[in-house]
Structures are given as structure tokens and as C-alpha cells.
Length: 171
Image (cartoon, rainbow, N blue to C red; front, side, top):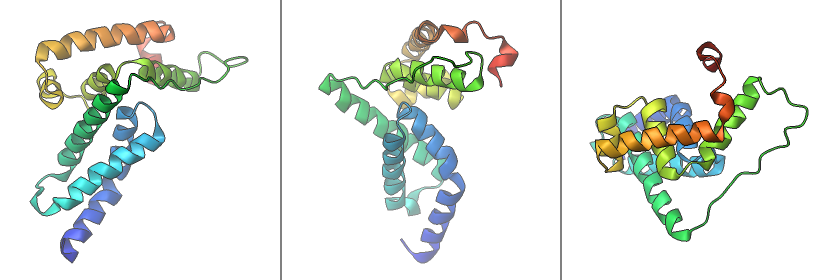
């Protein structure tokens, strides 16, 4: 990579790393270390092909999706499920925004990797079903049914989300 290309790459990383890290965090199921590794691998792969990348943001995002899918496939073979330890809830205000965030994080962590990926792509990335199907390598019907089952499971795991009014959920 020449000096000019390196300067452009560094500028891209400086300006977009926060948004990319949020995406990596969601894809990694709330595991900060795994998210950092995921983003680092994606940026390393992007840097290696920087001169041929026309639009770097979608390229890095697509690289992260594919890298995470590979990770999920390897983990599926291990037959091991990592479950975070939830803090004690005694004396906490169940309506606070912190409790809501913890409930959502915990519920998302308990979804399968595929369910989490579909929800992240559909609702965090706001991608249409056809694009999600293309990224994950499945059919649109699979995306629809997985979205439906994932939302039902999320409501089951975090019933406090069902009780919230729409204006409260936006806070």
C-alpha cells in the first residue's frame, strides 16, 4: 500500500471505527473482546485489498458478516454454548433504561447465532429481507420465518419488552 492509500485507509478507520465497532459488538452477541477481534480481522482483510475497494464501508460490513458466519459455523461444531452471567436484580428499578438494555442484551445473547444475525441485519442495519437472504446465503422465506421465530423468542426471553409502550421503547 502506498503512502496516499495508507493515509486514506487511516482516515476511514478513524472516522468509521465507532459505527463499525457497534455492529461488531452486536454480531458478536455482546462479547466486547470477540467484537474487537471481528473488527480487527475485517479491517486487516480490507487493508490488504484497499486499492481495489471502491466503497469501503459496505466492504468492511460484508467482511464482518462473513467472518462472523464462519465463526458461528465453527462454534456450532463445538456443541458448546456460552451464556453470560447476569447480575443480581435485587433492589433495581425494573423500568430504568439500564434494566431494559440488560434485558435486551441478555435475551439477544440467548438467541441462536442465526436468529441474532437476522435481527441485527433486519432491524439494526435496516436491510430488506432480500439483502439479508443474500448476505446469509439463504432464501427470503427463511429470513421471514427466522425473523418471526426470533422476535417471538425475544419476547419470550424478555417479557418486559412486551409491556412497554412504543414511546417508552424509543428512549
